[in-house]
Length: 129
Image 1 (cartoon, rainbow, N blue to C red):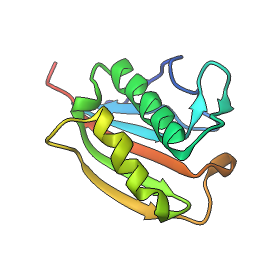
Image 2: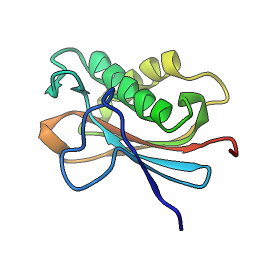
Image 3: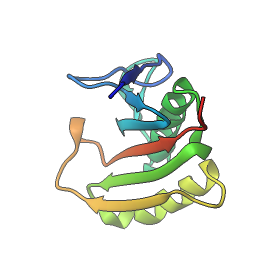
């Protein structure tokens, strides 16, 4: 299997032994993004909506580095430390995606890296090269 790592400075650098994304064929697996500002590598200090927006901006940057866009997202997985924030995910997501929306799962978790409230990963399917 041919695996190609994807990297962009427009999204936070990996904090650990993983890639921002891996492309295999037309499928790109994006690692989870948290609300880190890639310019400062500091967490967004703001509302949950601002944090979710930063996460989608980070995902968009990695998708573009892979040769696609958020329109290529087939599946999202949303991790929240409090599912009461799920309506905020829907609100922000509607600003980043058009119908047909990607498939999605939302999972309540006890904790996330750096103590954040939200992390989202994605799977893209690109057009054949």
